[in-house]
Length: 333
Image 1 (cartoon, rainbow, N blue to C red):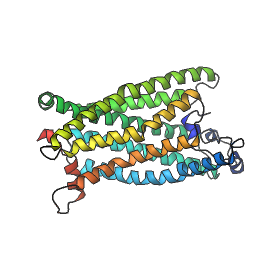
Image 2 (image 1 turned 180 degrees about the horizontal axis):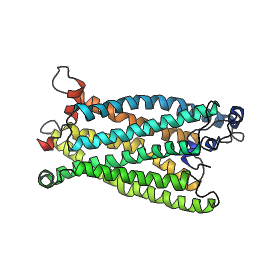
Image 3 (image 1 turned 120 degrees about the vertical axis):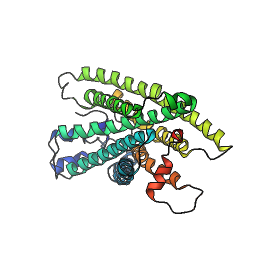
Image 4 (image 1 turned 180 degrees about the vertical axis):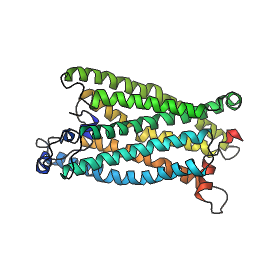
């Protein structure tokens, strides 16, 4: 049994799995919901949302992989790094990992349903962990980006003179470790039962505690920090716009944080409900959460490109110049 996320990623008629001859333990990951007791309308809605989750969302994710891949390439090889682009580079890696893991998960579901390949629990478990890992890491880096930019406004002298030189790199390493710890704990106690096969009730109690800790960490630590920092930046943008054009950097940070809170926060709520209650929410809720989180990881590159092309100069600029203009850290000038 894979609980929570693993049981809810995709649903399908149980007969399909029987016809496909699926007998491996990986079927636990794509185990179907019993639709025999559902009304015809519920059945049709489940079919529609299953199609969106399994077929439409991966297509959206593919575009996101291309966009984040372009950002990764330019920030790695074409654009000189600064304190800010280190975070953006790591954020792009996290979004890329999240989208890639989702596409692999859906490929596993499709191939298993069609009976072409059987996947081990270990393989599916690793991909599920990476999926959670990418989500958690994106949240961590957006918090760090908005917080540091806010500090540069509130304490400019400290930021210019006292800020440790390698703070960005060190903090990124710490955030990757924190995200891995959270995702690993979530997966081990809530999604994988190999270590609790004889003690399911004990796993359920621990899973609920872990779920409560993670949801509190999200809504009492990360979310308030992002909101407070973004509001500070927004006030700065409004004041600056009265005198001159505000830095694109501030606008981009506010927009990316707002998009994450609007599009990806429901996914955390979905994980909490499915893990804590051990029940699968409605297909409408599942579909919305997965689609929104997928779209969010695709939007950041579009935000960079759109705001990078907004310039008073009408001359055509290369993609390198566009991204350089977006990620210019005016606190260093």
